[in-house]
Length: 636
Image (cartoon, rainbow, N blue to C red; front, side, top):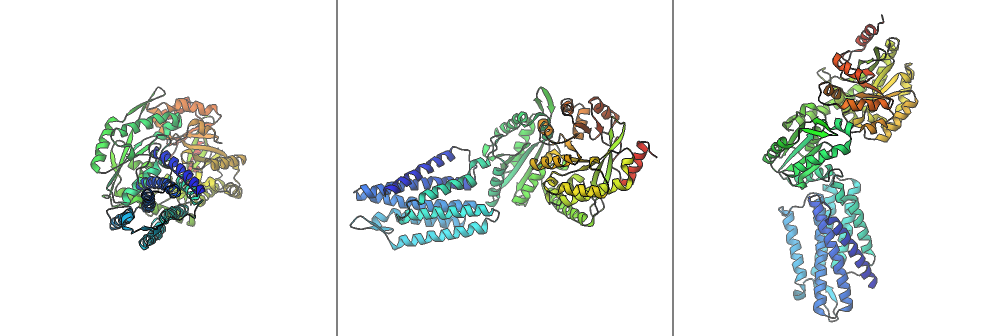
């Protein structure tokens, strides 16, 4: 018995430490977090009450004291079962006292507590022998049977209702349920056969906490607000309980371009400034940092959204001063309404994801954009395009266009970028960035990329483009393709099949889409060993700093047209700092979006190497490109 006392004291102390440590952390205000805190508290009290019970039974001769302690221990054990049941119900979003199930639970547990509390006088739950021993009655065993039914029901609910949970999460929750209810039954039944049981329960509880319930999982380390995980959990719970919700989102435009130049640490103060401004109008519990440039706020009504929108539009800074440089900036605002929009959680998240993407049609600066039916139409469009991509792969029907790249040093066209083209059912061309993105999401980019590479090699071989001044052929490479182990071998085989030297191949990859930097680095390094040159595409639109980019195994950096245009119009001076740093590292610069002689002169003065844009030519079909290149480079 003394050993069990020591174990119970250690368990109670550990639970107390865990409870108070968790209590002083920032908590996401959702039911499963609240019920888990209640469960921790009750389990802690359960351990302390068990210690009191063991000690009084051993050393006290007062019947009144013993009876009081025993009764309290049984009630706390019952509360442990109740808290466990409530936590499981919160995990499957069925914890609602307004429902018939909720009312039945409250009444049933209330009756059980009353039966135990009145037992010193009624002897409904237990009787006391002449020797001072406590014996359960038939009512007590019926109550335990009811609790067993609750255990089975909760397990069934957990596996049947929580279909969105992973197998690991379901197993963890099931083990927690069994452990907690078993230890509760031990206290209710007054069994003394589990000397080391609490050690296992407490350790499992700690593992469960670290794996699934840690508050840190929902907190953004950058701003200190709740993160996207917290947003998804809060939104899902509101919808599961049919709570009217108005989701408002503010997005900083061109944040990626500034991050490329100044780095995330410098722009952290911008994020915190926006957060502080929002917190003046909204409670911190409803504010979520869902992306480096985006904040989402969960409100109750459309009127609250409009009020917040008016406030932010008026008070958000239009001009930022960063490193003594004045930056003009714009914002996009969005709203999604539930249940007015007649959509569920998945559809709302699709619309939120859409708002965070780069579809300019839904990114008009300054206006409050309602992501309504048009967003659903766009999602339907994505499914249609995915089907068209699959058909193009099967039918080998992807087309390629070619756009020339001018060299300052050679004063002629020396490179060509291969651009994939895909038509829809109405024979209209689909935005290449869009269908490539769809292919990446559907994991068909491997087959699609191989088809594009093969057609580029066929074109170069059939038209003998390297005889007309062309030295390199630039082909776009998706970061997703870099995860394919045999990518290099397949490209080498295809190039060899059409007698295309690998040192004539340049691969362009976009840094803003890196999801597995190690795989990208490894693949680019292997391509480099084969003689392939690599260009970093669309630099200035992603989230990496110059320092990070310069660490990549790339030979060229393509400056995005948005930076070229904004520099030419005097809106920013990014290129003054950016281009010398890139050149100092021995990398060559290709400027995109050149449409005038003025822009050409600007890049020349900044010591750029190559130009690409409509000033020279739009993307051309194969035969048109060959005619153009012969004429421009002086070949007959």
